[in-house]
Amino acid sequence: MAQYDVIIIGAGPGGYVCAIRCAQLGLKTAVVEGRDTLGGTCLNVGCIPSKALLHASHSLHEAEHNFAKMGLKGKSPSVDWKQMLAYKDDVIGQNTKGIEFLFKKNKIDWLKGWGSIPAAGKVQVGDDIHDAKNIIIASGSEAASLPGVEVDEKVVVTSTGALELGKIPKKMVVIGAGVIGLELGSVYARLGSEVTVVEFLDVVTPGMDAEIQKVFQRTLKKQGLSFIMGAAVQKTEANKTKTKVTYKLRKDDNEHVIEADTVLVATGRKPYVEGLGLDKLGIELTQRGQIKVGADWQTNVPGIYAIGDVIEGPMLAHKAEDEGMAAAEQVAGKHGHVNYGVIPGVIYTAPEVANVGETEETLKEQGRAYKVGKFSFMGNGRAKANFAGDGFVKILADKATDRILGAHIIGPSAGELIHEICVAMEFGASAEDLALTCHAHPTYSEAVREAALACGDGPIHA
Image 1 (cartoon, helix red, strand yellow):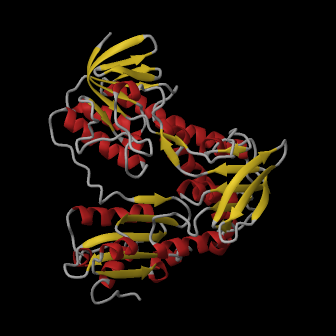
Image 2 (cartoon, rainbow, N blue to C red):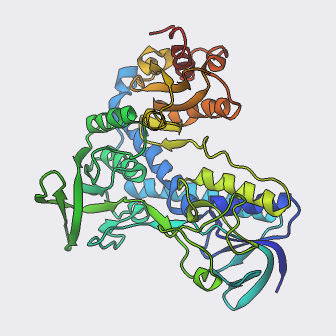
Image 3 (cartoon, rainbow, N blue to C red):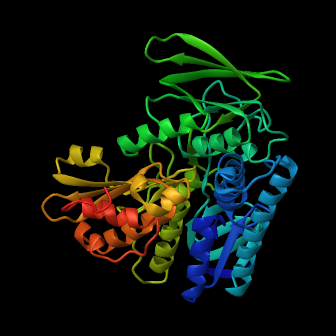
């Protein structure tokens, strides 16, 4: 079998980006992937297809609610579900074929099949054993469920099944008010489903800025989503037509039942390491089943590295990509670096939600003195013109130095707007630096500048 400088197990965002960077650095590279297409969960059954459905359903919402206000008269479009799914599949195809092209361009070998590591320096795919000076595990994650909840991907589904339902359900119950549940829940709510979100905690999107959580939940309620908070799901019982979801309210331990055509289990994800042979190798894991790595992304077994969802940290495609590039640099004898303090998070609902860095809650826990600069999109000319005045930008800066410590946005294009704050934080900028930077008018980005001005003498348009 061929000998490689590096073999990467998994062709998701972490794996394929790592492979391309390895090839660019002159390493003979191969990637093991058992799917028929490259791109992992993200491109095939995650980020990309869900964004296609979010875009399509948001376009429907605009046609139904805002077109007439702008003088665009006519019948609202009807939903052709099969065509919408075909559009989604076409988007997946374009992206996965693009990765295949990049592999060929960079002379990366695709070892088709599921991989295992029989020994350090060896990767087995089917009956073939390949030699590798370095092995990088990028096998990603899989949906986690709950005791008593049996997923069949038809009636009780994870995000995978939710992206290919046979028809739009009349009633949908979403278990879990995290990113995946709220994104897909909002898709089906726009398409006419009655969506109820059941969440164990008392807040949506755990870990996010508390003010954003409240405003976000209130906004989704206005859009028709219902919430049952502080509820522990006990079990699901499916028959041919309906599924019963039994839950207990934590405040009084009372048991309740809700019925739905479809139940979406969105209770998070867990590392996927099945079949790799980590036990035999003696690779150390955390209590949560993640692979332990050092600062160089190397495991306790020399020459074996791990990146992305299989290690600690947020399960985000772009975090995996950054680690993939950094691990490639390490393997090539260079210095890889990831700034874990500046990894943005985005929820692609409408309005979008984005965050980076510290929250007010984490700063209070640290006892760090900070100031808040906040600006509402209602004061932004372009947002008002585009029926997108809901939401705000909040910037947190050090009280003494004015250095930007974090930012939280709910509003139009929040996922794009967050990045100028990321760049500012990467360069150690102050809020004043951002406030003194000329921003084009009229743009949503002006709201970011106004929030930065609010950290000083105050915004102009509020």
